[in-house]
Length: 388
Image 1 (cartoon, rainbow, N blue to C red):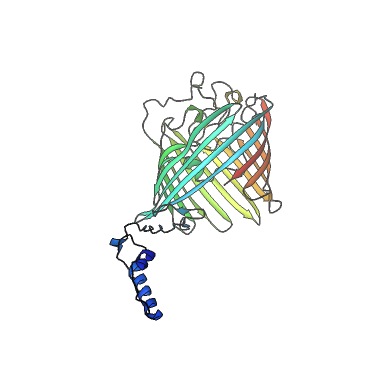
Image 2: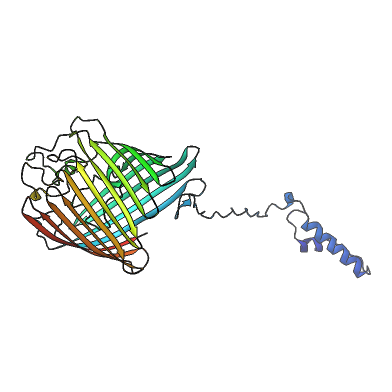
């Protein structure tokens, strides 16, 4: 019967004249059923449809905070984040001799975070890539790249001397008076007791940052004898700190030792909330006010300082204070002032406006006075930033 259709089968059947119609009908029906029920071996032309693969939806991973999701087929959680910033700048709060008019700066950052539960605690990675363009020149930078397991972190991120104390104020020019180094390799252990007490100890690579840590210029060693060469130096720098956070206040202290200069610095910070207003006071002490070191250095240009003197740094001590005051649900006012024993004054204020969620518009005005150099500067920023 292979290859025969129902019609061919019926044509091949013979009926005697006078046979009852009912009997003929039964014969036709039975024959049709035989054809339909024929084994697959007799239906070589049949097409069998493949079963569709089950749909896989992206699963939310809320064990490590918002915005994480599972990478399909794994138990690893992934978070993508970033920001796009464009801002106009007028003069430079870090350089008393800057006299440019308006210049424009654009920045893009992409953050990639992963997290997985293990028997030793969360296994995490943190990566931040940055692209920046200013006056026709574009730069790329690997800002952060680190791995953490439990409380141990290894890789590149900002120094614990600055991040453990939550940097400074809520302003763009918060480090005109230097408060610590950025972007260096380290091996760090963080402890959180769960009751408000935290502690940290860190070994930081003394070769991660360039000479600009000790002086605002890229190559000051030729004219400034306090910049110590780090060639053939392999001993790490050491940072340690502890703190406590209550309901409306917090206190942290941190110390850093520069193994190249063989000096260091200590900072202490106190935070308090007065209703919706948040304020802070931070003080720093340099173990040798006549020298710059990685933890009591400078971000200022050489024109801010007399030659052969470390007056562009703190001197023996430095102070920072500031506050954030909400004006409305979408508008806040922020201010910070800083002063050093070397008689550097830096004041900055801004207004932060969030017209819609994740969009920031921020005009900022800064004033810096260098008493030792008998110079001052007024500078401004107008920033637009979109976070995602």
